[in-house]
Image 1 (tube, rainbow, N blue to C red):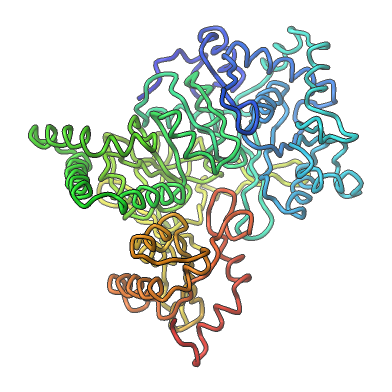
Image 2: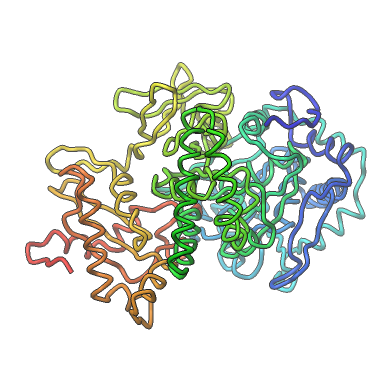
Length: 613
């Protein structure tokens, strides 16, 4: 649905400050931003759009007094809290460029970004961040001059966010604020996003107002939502998906952003708020599905049978929609009854009963997960894109989708496939290039404007894109065969016990795998079978679990060709995550890190003496 709100200009001429000015003038009393006042706080604090613009203006004056000027990069390392969101807007109104850094970044990554961006100011959350940032103030190779700290009690000798805001309140001049943002042009940089770096140093992706405003307008046309809908904002702002969904789209729609400071608490926020829209990376949807399956396993057989029958109706109905067919009246009536009696009560417990738009992106969604949710009447609109494309390139929409695909190109974007299957794209939402350390921009497109995405895929006869793998992650065996690791991993992960997987086989004659149990479903599976385990690690070593994993691998292999089959594997005793380094902050698998960390185990899987557990 295209928003019915007035646009303050043609889509290609929009700037973020112009949208905020419109929201304050025309939707000023509507809620804009809400957050919990502190850990465990029961109440939400809310700012209206009028209040957001007033605080943005004050903050802009505070940053200007600190010496921030048009074109400056300012680094932000905070969680999803109001100081982060409002600072982002304030800096843009000055013509400065906010650059969010992942909170899980290692010191050497932070140093690289600080040096490369030439930023003189960084705004950080508290003591945990200061430990990584303070050494840079005395590093002769890093231009950083000043730190601002959000948590005043942890600021030490550094400037606090509160004092910066107070100085802005004293010094604010409305005419200077209005002139600064009105000087902004659509081609000016809106942000620089440093890619999370599954390999090598992060690259600075420079995105303009035009890139991101067009992305917001065109994505909005694929989404069916009531106006001013709420968005639960829990992914890091260093991730392009949350920047679009949690900042730019809400500005376009005058929507309501609910900040969730702790990503692990998002399930609780969903239960409380019962949103009409929800975006989750594939791992989030996998974990939610595992939680539902764990609940189902505990239900009486009669109730499970009723739910499974309702699931079948929902999937049949989704199939008609997928094929563009009219849904038979009898099926629609049966589904409505089954949804009300069997599905909605359980969905309501999870806060998922009001959803009208659900989406995923960043990595191929396992088809079994997509079909699982289709059985609950939740059609996940899978999309695909990159930081370099300002977010999505292709998207499924309610009136045109294929489960398992990542949809069709958004308006104004072209796709074509290279000879090796790599997806190339061009259009106005594709970035101008990577930031160089001298402040210039290096184009990454060819002479005709085509940008190589690094992803491998295929286009079907209806124009839907199907992802195969990352070009650089394809396994080439010693026999010269190409294997998609994501295909093999997603196949073995279809068994509910297996939550994570990595397959390896580059320059080898066969594939091996590292497997991790699903931390939500595995304990429930064990409890239902009377298996007692004191820890996650002990459960992974239990003979009954090992037997079931063996059957899961065997079943996966039966669906794969000989080259793709897993010959040997090892079940690990710890889950992978961003903190331990195996996943990026956006929950993508860092294959290089996993291979290095478990190199001895992987090598052992190729030894002649290895025995499958």
